[in-house]
Image (cartoon, rainbow, N blue to C red; front, side, top):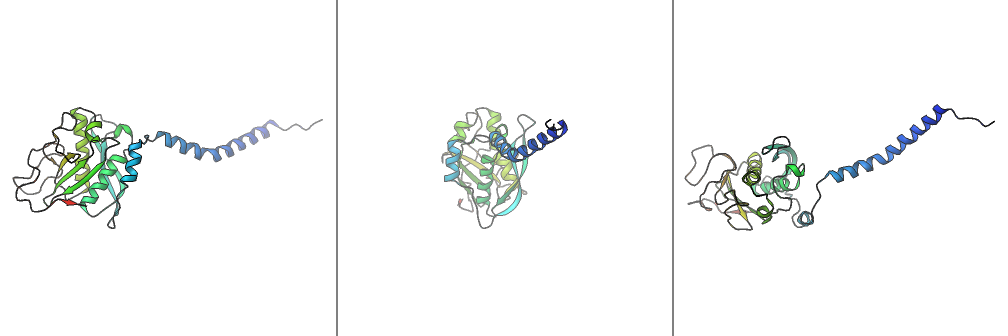
Length: 231
């Protein structure tokens, strides 16, 4: 009479096999799920990562930066996310690193404030704290038209710079090197957007107020003490 294996032994053996199978295959499955959850990278993003790789400088130091993306809970609001970054001590390069992170590292598509395919073409900084950020035309063509979405895009830039770059007082937005009337039909881009309030009484060419509201003054302040810094 053949020996019969107890049912408990069979169940225990099956359980051990299942656990071993899971231990082998679960990590790969988990990685696959994570990859599916990530926003799809467009050809433009992949090209930009080659043409414009992340900026690294000899003065880079790891810091916990505050990056402003759209809020995950309150529609129309923004909230800072603490991100550990290697940031340069040079304010121009530091600003470029921060804007690159703002574009490329959004926690989710829903929290994105700038188009995924936009590129920061150049960034300048005057001695008086006036910054000029020149973006590709994707900033205008891919930002959803509407005062809220346009305001959010500029506010995210201004607030991210305010939280992490002491030298910047205000910022001018250019598209393909050109002054533009509006971002996508609503938000006025002809002036400057305050980034950080000036502690003392501002000069006639400076502006103060909350980030995100343009102040219409000339691109080159009268009697400017510095030249555009390009790095």
